[in-house]
Length: 375
Image (tube, rainbow, N blue to C red; front, top):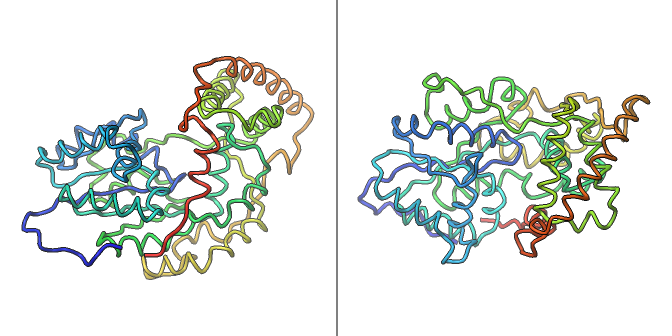
């Protein structure tokens, strides 16, 4: 447990904006913008550390700051400390939804905030909570299109509905425990329409009008045809499909996206939610959400997320709404051709490396099995 806030330092601290997600709340768009505008942000006094990821996320950096890497493999953290020492910027911006997973672990949180303190940074957590019904729907498309999961949507919901990552109130307790400010910016359907990047910039006191590319939108959701293809392909491999490595499923996901794009079959707008299922999810999280909303905004969750809570849904999942014969025929052809592609991927020895980071089940369990801690 951290002690009381230490205000003894006579050296002015730089604010460190720490964007922690959650997953599926526009994080890829935000990270891409930060990466592409590092030079302009630097002119405004905001330092964005270089990222090893082409999308701009700081996965390696935050993992190392949390102590989740051997000491001889903490180059990203060492570079970050060196840059912080030399920079004259007044603010630092880090973005990684990995922190949504890591900081629920007490040891990771303690190590992370200790390192931030050592660097004489004043932590400010930036969090974009999303209504869990829409979040689960979006999360499902992400894990299915990448061939990570293949169960029906409702089975996925029942397995994940009480996952601790969907409990937002603990972020307030965490911020209080480590003397950090928490900026909670609701991620709603209106946010998607307006654009998440301008919302994020305003949250960290940057005028979006200073930039010309704030409407960037990355990692768009897929539709029911894509979801059905991915599920059917993975299901066709049976138990063998559960043994695929992380590199193999990553390659398969890329192959699927490229194939559908080339054939003009890429779609969007998947919905597995029924109105009844959405109400069930909202009921499960109502008390937790209201506790968070009252602390963060002084209003109820339903008031803040008025456009999301209580919505009517019409699912388009092929398991629930079977398509016509023409679509079914096209689906069978695509699945057959994708299975052949997957077989080729499985023959590539470079994708079957035996290592902990290439174990898909272990990587999934990092999200599924995180333990919550009270602060």
